[in-house]
Image (cartoon, rainbow, N blue to C red; front, side, top):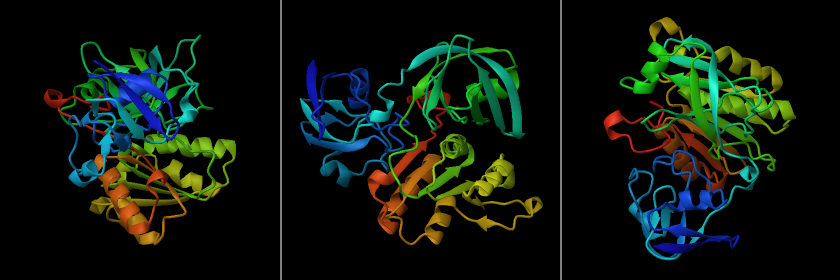
Amino acid sequence: MTFKTVIQPSGHNFPIEAHETILEAALKHGYTLPYSCRDGVCGTCKGKVVTGQVDYGKYQESTLSEAEKAAGMALFCCAKPLSNLAIECREVNALKDIPVKTIPCRVQKMERPAPDVMVLSLKLPANERLQFLAGQYIDILLKDEKPRSFSLANAPHDDEFLELHIRNITGGAFTHYVFEVMKERDILRFRGPLGTFFLREDSDKPIIFVASGTGFAPIKAIIEHALYIGVKRPMHFYWGGRKLADLYMLDKAEQWEDSGIKFTPVLSEALPEDAWQGRTGFVHQAVLDDYRDLSPYEVYTCGAPVVVEAAHRDFTAQRGLPNEAFFSDAFTFHPKSERRGLRSQD
């Protein structure tokens, strides 16, 4: 059965099949709604169902509360129509003219900046180029398995190679392949670019970046892009890990301070051999400690869902950050037997 969905306030409308999620149908018909994990975890796609009924689908309960559902909110990456719909959300117009492609690539270089982190440099065919916005991700396509999603760690101006940061996940089939089997010159296929995590260049607000672990990858791309185009907005980057080795490109982050970007590394479980003298605790708490009022800021957060969720909850509820000024990308990991989402990295 086919229904009709109207986007407010733009008035754009598109047909939607009963088996499609709102996000799937919108993207298919050329309307980009905010999204990231496509798995009901990160909350980026949350919006209001103004009229009509939906099947909310499967999602992480902490991401969509019963009170929010009662107020008409839904996760558009999970919700499917039960009637004609009117939804309220902002559209992302910057992606309109960027095509999503499926492209082969060659593994040009493999480097380990930490024991459990691999940096892959991927080379495209000579006649191909990937147009993307700094912060977006690609899906690595695997035969007979769900895609694995990885953020692009390089900025668009530096696109001789596509750079991925991959953490070795215990029990992860793909990461086992990357760390134990993959070799340089292997061929992969990917689809992209995807996601709505990128710098809003039309804003003049100061920026706070928050990353945990390999959530550093898209933040790196955004910061390098901002420096390249000469963004003058104040920027403060917080990078959290458990131990010092988790901050696997610490020197690079420290170099950005020479360009005026404030940098605060934070460790939650520093080892004795780390001899750590810096900030400790949870990375989002360090932001709370430093900023009493976030209402004038934009925040870009990437990494583990627990970090993204805590940052969104506390920054908006305790520090006055407007919901529309919080941009996020949450990395999700599912055991192979339970994998159902598309933003999986294992």
